[in-house]
Length: 180
Image 1 (cartoon, one colour):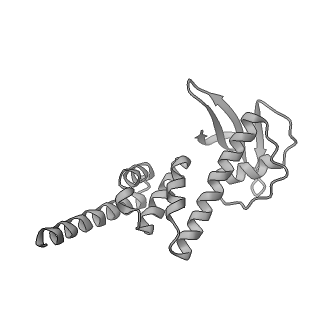
Image 2: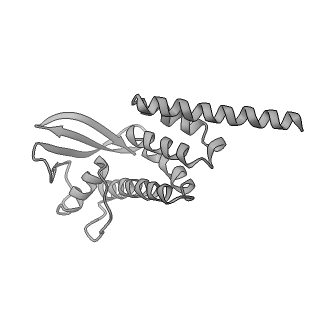
Image 3: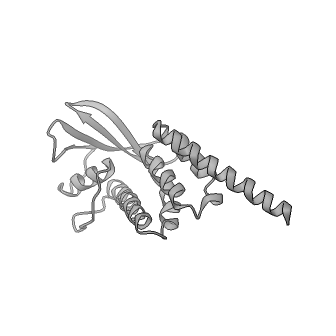
């Protein structure tokens, strides 16, 4: 029995140190590291919703959108966690729908979805407003800042098609997001 208690203390201490390390890395904007640590230790922290939210927000910051579904399903115990799960769900769904629209010429005009402040949501909302004419790329002007625009297009690599969103400020690319 003593060995079991000692093991339990060690495991809890280890989990606490992982979360503390992740928080420190997150505060230092090392989102990719946080996302990877969170992913690698997810199963042993599946009941810690603070851990899961930290992991999911880090993944969102580095465009690892496809890692969100495991967080979405695990975030359910508190009001804040359910709110986070809803936020992640919206972005994930918009990515999937935008991918479907760009690759399969699926018309999104009939959809009326919630939105977020994430770049993928902004581009999704702007794309939905367009005519359903297939183009090589789409140049979308931001509704709130006329100096900001987004270039949306697809690329093909060896294995699969990807969506590319370039964030432009005064026609200069300031960020590029690639999703599959």
